[in-house]
Length: 208
Image 1 (tube, rainbow, N blue to C red):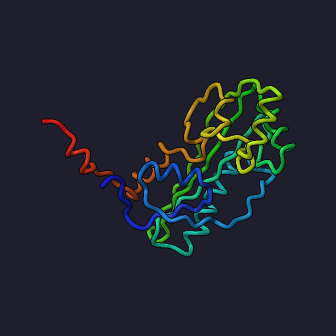
Image 2: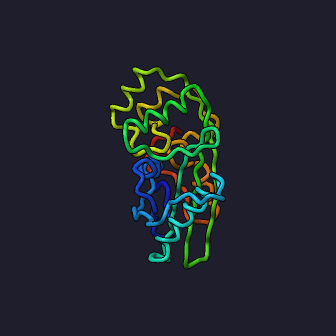
């Protein structure tokens, strides 16, 4: 009972945050990361970039698993027109946090749903705005020393310790984590990839 899929479901991403969000919803799925070149093309906008990468990730897995529903996703952070990737050192993380401190930035996630044997392909981009408070030097030194920033676009985790820097989020909160659940679930339901059913526990707990 709960969420059921009309076939095998594969997440084409190694992101533990995306896996956690899907598990939270009750999805049963396999993880097969899409193996693609994630280089940013000069002519691409941030929205075009995440949309292309999400589709390429999904297609790279769907070609080998044509009878499965495959979900690919990619997330980037953009501040004042600059795309921030994942920092590789405390110095890089500090520079990114300095750019975000006291400013608003955008988080874009592109996601694609592919089912090869039914010729189904869905692509969407979701954007959220995030406002950081001022981050002072001792806080920055503490945070870069935690190890949390180093596999995160923009050098922070909204669902982790980095959440203490966030003053406001406009738009999808789960999008900032890495997967806009509202839009993904609606898209999966629209193409009949998933169905909802009442749990037996909920039925037993009802009065009257």
